[in-house]
Length: 315
Image (tube, rainbow, N blue to C red; front, side):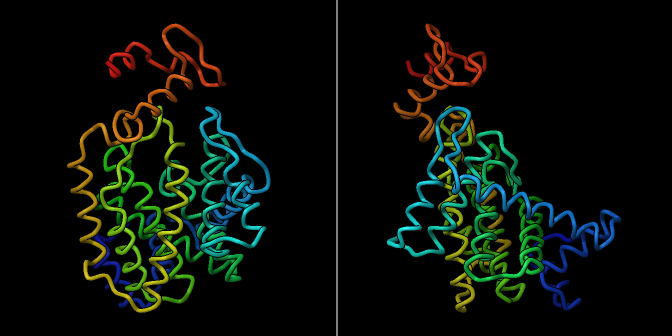
């Protein structure tokens, strides 16, 4: 993106009288050389994949290849149908859709990595929930996606979206910030409000480690996607109500990056520390990939697991 940071984006949006979504679309046209129709059309294709990945797991039980996750989106959908949820339709639907995307991803289905596969459920869940619960038209959904892309580009340029580099705050945190900005854009908020929503999300996700069980983006990733969708919606609501982040967006991005760099390697997608390092986490890893004296009981390739290394870690 041909801008340095969020502050410059806000200046350019003001000068050109554009929303963040409109500005991002224009930037993509200039940098790619593609026409408006071509750029817009590609985002429509992304939306179609999001529609599939958010609903598949709600309509049927989708089980991951490892067997670690599966069926939770379906359970949430059934729970929603009962009409007795504590947090209401919007929240439960967003959670069910986020879980569905994670389950589709872990079962080798087609998803949109937005910004990563591990955080693929947050933005689609929020977008599709807004479409259904607030009757947002497709053109506005698309502009919301472009707004999220603009925010994601700023994060990637100034920090990281990689869990291996910055922890889950860089994956689910970034995805939730992108989704919060998308909601504000779709609800008619200003560019300043979009970045305020993103800043609020980051303030609430700073320090979130990346500790996937067995190194797979399934546990606790799927449930963090559900939580990220909720975080995005709540941050958007605060911003639309007039709440302003005292720490600006660019500063929250910088804080996320510095915290990520300070995290020990064990907490950055290595599958060593955090939940992955617990007794249960190590047990699940052995069950998935097998052990020195036995074969795994699932469809994963036994050869991908270094049993001797795992035994040394336990010692």
